[in-house]
Length: 215
Image (cartoon, rainbow, N blue to C red; front, top):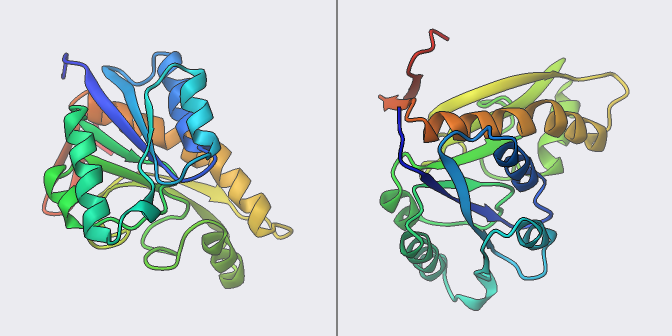
């Protein structure tokens, strides 16, 4: 088991509800050796920055609009994370496109939470309410959330954890989004972060194996 503190950097673009779930888990002692030491927002004035400030976590704005290309932004982001000695990067509602520079400098060290059961309703264009609109249009009986390791191909990295959530006949995209957040995202994201911080995640041939667990 990892005994060294794992520094966590959380990337956000909006309200930061998943960031708050991580902060709450940290304050309950549920992130193991992990500690959120940096929050980076891709836009100024988002509420996620207030959440960080309210819990005395260092926060920075790295505004996408201030960079003339994805490559320039990605380099600045990777440089900022490395300068802060971040061990684990968590995408928590981070909607800005980044390139392989970030993935190559943090191999198997970037986690993302997606509001569906990958490989359903994922990939390009599937973000926010679009995911839930597609699920309801298809008439699925269950949806849920997935935490996966980020790779250059959108939503295609090794799956760490998944949790299913019932889809109800009277659901709207908004009600389904809320249920998936509360029943799945906010539960499995902190758990996946803890597994990483405790040194229990092993990646082999694009699959995640959790040490000490049979399932």
